[in-house]
Image: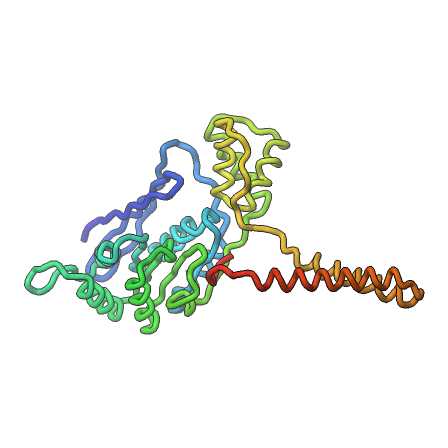
Length: 312
C-alpha cells in the first residue's frame, strides 16, 4: 500500500496533482489538488455533458476521439474524465506527446506494468509495448491521450493495435490527420462555449488581474474569442497589458454557402421575370450573372486543396 502522485502542468500555468492510493488490486483516486501561481478560484467546468458521455462510453469499453480547435477545453475535459474514472477505482494513464520511450515508460509507471526484464534490464521500446499490452489484456484500465495529433507514427500504430484488441481509450486532438487510429474512433467535436460562459471566464480573468472591464469592453473583447476559453483569458491579459488589438485567430466562422445559394436563386428569379415581361435586358442580366457565379464557383473548387484533416 502506498501513495503516488501524478503531476500535470497545463498551458495556462495551472498545475494539477492527482493523488492515487496504490494497492496490489487497484489504484484509487483519493483526491485532486489544484494549484496555480495565484490563489484564485478555478472557473466553473462547462463540459459536464460531454464528460458524462465520455465516461459512460469508456466504461462500456468504447473508445472516443475528441476534436476541437486549440484552447477550446480539450485538456480540461480529459482531466475531468481522468478524475471521474479514478474516483470509481479504475486504473488509468494520462499521456502527453513525448518520445516513444518516454510515453511508454509513463504509461507503465502509471499502470504498474513491468519496465524491466527478468534479468533486471530496462526494457526497450518493443518490450515496453508488449509489457503494457499484456497488463491491459489482464486488467481493466484506460488510456487518456492529449494532443494525440503530435504522437509519432509508431505510437499511433501501437494504439491502433490496442484498439483492435478492444482496449478503451480517449484521444484528444486538434485537426488530426485522416488516417490510422484517427479514422477508426468515433469522435466528439467540442462546440464553442456560449456568450454567457465566455463572459464569465473573462470576468474572472479580469478579477485575477485586478482590473475592471465595462460591459462594452467585455462585448468588444468577446468578439475576438469565438467561444474559445483560452482566447477569452488571453484577450483580457492583452487588454491589461495595453496591447493593440490583433486579428482573431479562432476558426469559428460563418458558412457563406447559404448566401451564395440565395444569391443564385435571386438572379434566376430575375431571369424568369425578364422572360415573363418580355424584357430582354433583365433576362440577359440574370443569365450573365448566373454564368459568372458558376465560373467563379468552378475556379474556387479547382484550386489546390490542403491536406485532409478530421478537424476544422
